Image (tube, rainbow, N blue to C red):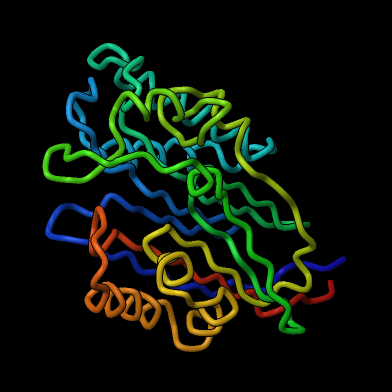
Length: 264
């Protein structure tokens, strides 16, 4: 029989502005997650802010993750649990009710992973091969003109209502537990995995916006630390002359290192 040796990990999360950080990460003995709160829309029908939603979702996942259930079922139950906390005070039918994207991994006999929204999970094997998993359904949508909503350039609410948690659009954790069934999920043999990265799209900008490759980003994180990668994405944002919704986004990275396996 084999078991994983003690896991080593490093994580950092940085806000993109003076506003509260809407990202969150948790790391435990056999699982880890990153959540990226969706920037709030005006008139979202909720008396709570995005950090409240993100914190509640993380807590609800943590309460259930030890159960021997598929990750998508755990996420669905966590979404339902958060709904129960504010159904009496908030309009959960509002199409822009607070929500979050999710990156979740759990390991034991194998590595399990889940992505809902544009977080990324990537790992490098002991032979140097990399594997990248992301949810690109949001990026694949046709662009529509952005509008100014409370000082942030965003998609119009009527467009979001047509594509968020809809079959022709993209999926996030918000008020519909059924959205969890639309997550990208998978498993992999844990034995070859040396290092794993979970990150929000604030760090993935290095690839999506600044033309780095994922192997380059993984090398930076795994060899120089998550702080070096977060420093680089901030430097790129400072130099970027192109207009955008945000010069900097909240950015979170979790590096998990699996030193190897021991025989029992």
